[in-house]
Image 1 (cartoon, rainbow, N blue to C red):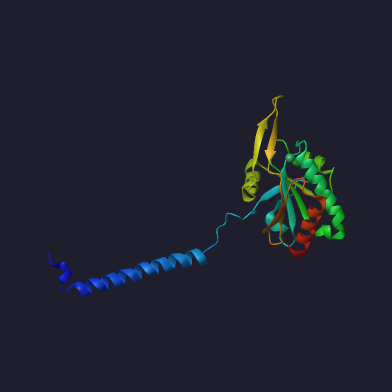
Image 2: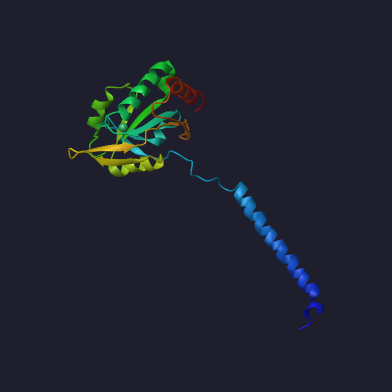
Length: 203
Ligand code: NI
């Protein structure tokens, strides 16, 4: 009944003090974990893949280490975005001069059903011969798609065929295989060139 006056008051005060210290330590740990813990990986773009080039050879991301690369996802039946982008990248390589030999430019087809290495070989003839077309099984392509967080979806056409909506950004990756930046679709010619130059100088 008469708890307030009880001689246990000192003990209760000590318990409260301990509780306060425990709570404070817990909060401090949570703060430290938030501050020094692993940063969120949400922004990471890129990752492992093994695909087949237009000559039938295998190419993995690991083989690209040591030189920067640019990678773009699309499909050879694409009416506009893909040919425009590949043409602009061809133009960029030409403008970079001899430095461009250090830059790998990859075109990964998300249309594994139609884009065989032979199809890609014919298609890539329209562009700078240094660029590499890549295809693979649906699973192999999907692995690259997931790594680069690319969006694509088949869209049925009136003639019973299909077209594909897809991410139109070119991903710029440094020589360690880490994300460096992007080139947006129809970005200004000068901006595109500056981005490629910066990738070669710093990436
Ligand atoms: Ni396209």
